[in-house]
Image (cartoon, rainbow, N blue to C red; front, side, top):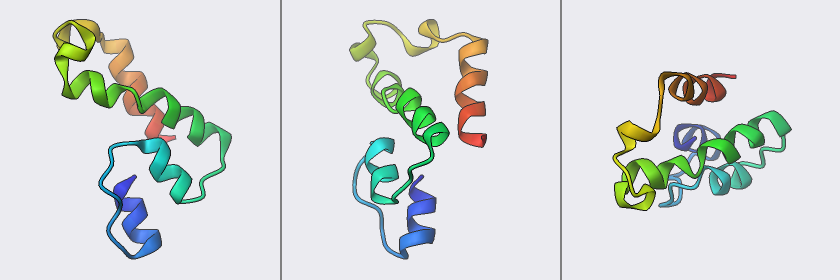
Length: 75
């Protein structure tokens, strides 16, 4: 999303990890994209700060979830 921001706006993106904020600033309105953004946005906190999930991230994800998280941005 930050690469898209740089490509479209020709400037550095804001210092944020919020996919929702980045998509809003890019003016993205497509419901399927926003749906994917809303699904992925909270994953940043859980994967970056393991204590936020009260568990090791590797133990709270399975292969199906990983595949889904990889496929949504591709769409």
